[in-house]
Image 1 (cartoon, rainbow, N blue to C red):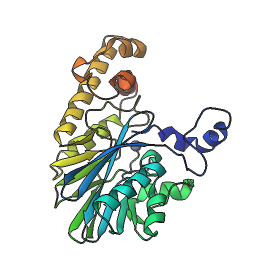
Image 2: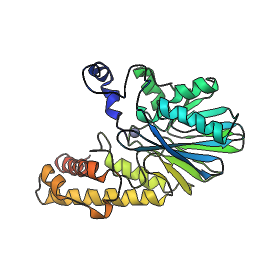
Image 3: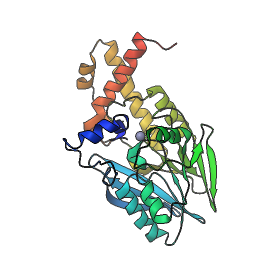
Length: 308
Ligand SMILES: [Zn+2]
């Protein structure tokens, strides 16, 4: 969930803006881009580690899997997080090479640390991502993002690293139409990022997200062969977290639609709707009203301009 998502679209403006405003985490070399503090690591399956970080806004999780041919790293987050990841690899898999980096999708708040990993391990490892992630960075040329070297289509792909397999699933177009969901079948382990999280409300007013497609992706996720999931927000859990996400968004959707039917304005809906059973979700106090607004607009647009 993307504190920096909007930065992509207004990249140049923000670079120039930082000289006159307080944007301490961002510069054009990316040295300080999205600074993270390391919280801790957990071995959640044999040779599979989840890593927790915090930035100014929220918790982020990523992870790595140790195979007999080296270490496979999921989203490398940022420079500072990648340095911590290197220390963790040295601790848990000493002298192992970097086998691959996998970008879950094109949002830079999740993938900016690849260059630090590559510099440390020798720039040899492939960077695997959806082909639209590769195309995005070919066009944008964001200086602190290492472009993918391996492109995966909507059909998905499977990579083998010694005794570990990484299946890359494409489950739908919501949230950038570039999300790959890695599954390591030998460990029944998955890594799920942003379109579903573990007891976290959606990011602000879910900008630009096709909400029907987002929930369809969540339902497809339930079919993955995974018993453990690293959620990039909310942390490790199992697929019941996705069931809770579906229940949550269904409840928000129904409440927003009911408010619309009663004639409430968007502001009135946002100010009056509470879902107390989800108040324990992370970021509820900050973003729940934004989620209500997103679904209110979604239903309103369906009413006034029904889909053909
Ligand atoms: Zn994202």
